[in-house]
Length: 125
Image 1: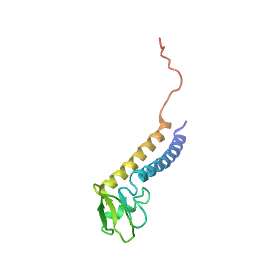
Image 2: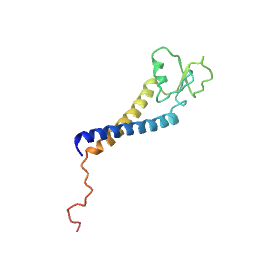
Image 3: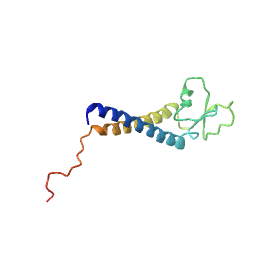
Image 4: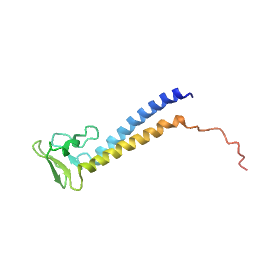
């Protein structure tokens, strides 16, 4: 396969892998963090996509540190579970995003590897 074709194939593989990893990260985020670590009083939670929680450190939002997330009204402050911080939430998000990039780059690099499927010329006995 010629290099221009490998580039196109690698871009396609990277894109498909990144979409797949985003789906996996979204599911993991929802299962592990969404509404468990941060609760947004505007009707959303710490969504992997929307990053509504990203603005809590800029002074526009009031945030209460709580033992359990339990938003009951839009007039309530956003809630962040005890032991967590905005920086820690960002660290988890960057870890998820970084893992998505690494996995996608790995799969996108496969067309550039020279893998031989033919039997080895080295005798086995």
